[in-house]
Image (cartoon, rainbow, N blue to C red; front, side):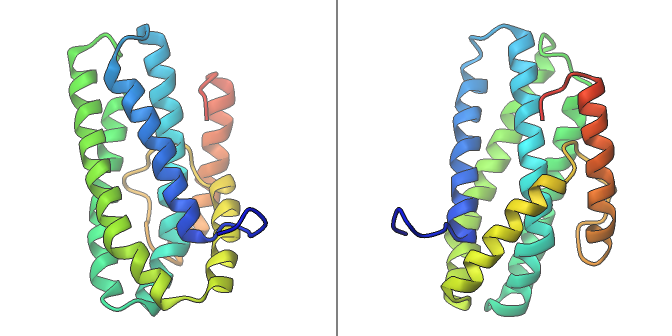
Length: 187
């Protein structure tokens, strides 16, 4: 990609992964005050949820339709999303001063690093092979829009495949953004 080209879907996903990794490192350092760590985790979770919902709405259906072994890869990715989302939900109720906080954060980070590695090693190269650049750029633009409408909090029981996630996601996103504003939660 040159400086004048629009980023494509794969570029945007990898950029998100790198942003999340920077937050992982800061959380694992554990040197900031507990209140800061809580806000950083809330910010991370909001980003992760938006990212995952956009993948579930756009990336995974495209992979199923176009990539070799797309259905198997997507089933695995959805399982990993579900596990991570449950950890994020569990973390909502844990104070940053509780020893369980660091344990759960560490587990979440380990799971997500594994997920990113697999996604970048298998799914994203398969998408690059199966889709032309224009399609990937269009999907990237759609992903950016989907992230704006997506929920910012974990909803483990919400649907994660179309068409249900396309209907439920924006509604949950609106409710979450209202809750974030009222609760002064970063999103």
